[in-house]
Image (cartoon, rainbow, N blue to C red; front, side):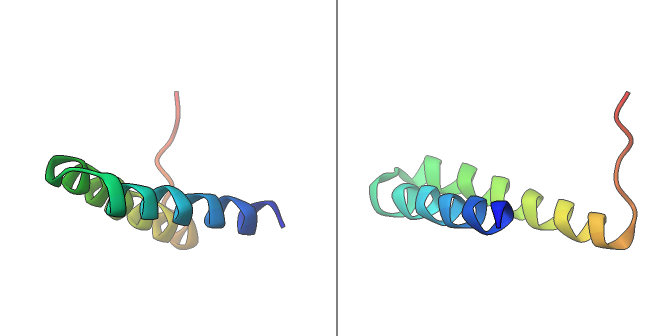
Length: 52
């Protein structure tokens, strides 16, 4: 259930940036979301980056 809660919080934050953010903030938010999506697919693929 914790993951579901985090997803709703992420959705809320993204919505706030969308409705109140500047064009520069929109661009930064897109970068964050694209990287988050890639990272999640890496987890599914078992190709997680190692942390030192």
